[in-house]
Length: 411
Image (cartoon, rainbow, N blue to C red; front, side, top):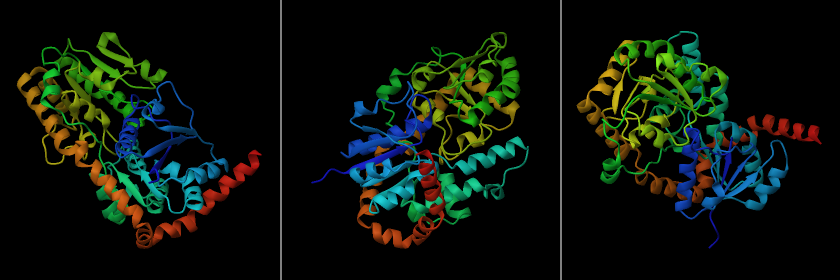
């Protein structure tokens, strides 16, 4: 029986300690490992000291080059059963080459989050405008949705984004697959090992600073939330963690105000388990926020906004509070920090959310079965999604010939 092969093409090499996107990618890789796939991870990006040691997991690594026919030879020799594109920009670069060299390969897009949704919300916040679905019809949306339509299946991490794609853009659910974060169950043994309310102190925020919503949140914390919250908790410190903190982030450090910028956390969860409350007044974004998954997995209650908690809790109570008004947000953070009974109840809500909505055994088997069935019925599936073939025939030609032109120019 021949090996089942999957190729991941990454925008970057996954950094699970730096970003939720990197953590998500490692969860997908682990899912294929459990099903005995031969896994290759390829990227044109340079590695960093924080890139995951994929070879230690049995994953083959391959450096590839943008706009170069060497990729064609690589993919032709590999002949993967499945290719997973890490975000739509990667599909734009390599999708046409996969379709051309390996037409029977299943093409899967991992969206991470909907970039056009995040950008539209960001523009509205910047321009102090009310967000509406009309703001979504942008050039980025055209590119990202074209990528979704070209692929055989797109992985969507948020139920809210599933709804936008199917109801606003009328995309067939047959080419979309809801796949949230894939988490281990929180067991009684793990709960017993968590630090107690008295053992924890201070507040924290954590987020990769390459990601614009995180930088904006820290600014909002500094100017809108902390002046109010510090009056309520004068002896408490707020610690800011995040990978790739630039000078503009570091200069916000102010010990006199108990506002400390700590920089990178080597492990988000090991860091978070020492704090009493996560404060994350996120003003714009998309997808599902990994920082709240980490918080729930470490028994750390949180206070966030409607955008921050979007699509995360389903019908369950939040593991803390969801508030958009700065004054109410600050009061609720104070209440959660000071009241052990409320804090413990919030912790219980987080356990329920993880175990009911993100426990990986609820999703992995069905997901892999779906891929296997799709692989067997690929011709019928593509006929039903004929627009995919139209887009490959027409829209990808510009990307294809631009790439070939750049390749020729580089010779």
